[in-house]
Amino acid sequence: MPPPLDQPGIDRLLAEARARIGDRITPAELAGEAAAGALVVDTRSHRQREEDGPLPGAVVIERNVLEWRLDPSSPHRLAEMDDPARRVVVVCDEGYASTLAAATLRDLGVDATDLEGGFQAWRNHRRRTASDT
Image 1 (tube, rainbow, N blue to C red):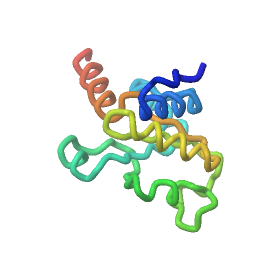
Image 2 (tube, rainbow, N blue to C red):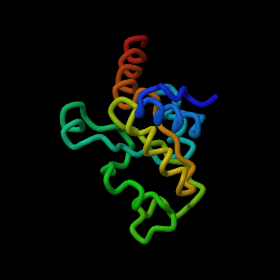
Image 3 (cartoon, helix red, strand yellow):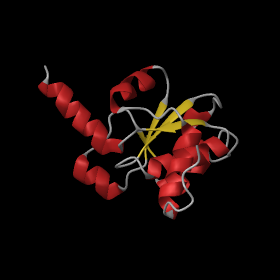
């Protein structure tokens, strides 16, 4: 069902993007996606990475060049994107910008999704699971 037309612009855009993506990844699923061969891409700003630390195993790609680095047909793509069928999981700080980025990558034919709640949700999940052990 499409979002209501009276919904604010960005909220509507996010809802439409999330509906197109469909299968967003939870923090608990991220390690499994990476183990299965997905390319995990951290699009957080330099400042956010400095403050909160790295996302282990992720490739850092600034948001302003994301499409050029991940489009399998781009001459500027990463070597990791030589396989056009490779799954990509985009991660931002809180799971908003990554949704829009993943939807754009899908428009380019990339099997892209994003991490629900972004890095912050992943970090909180990691803390909860570490305290359970």
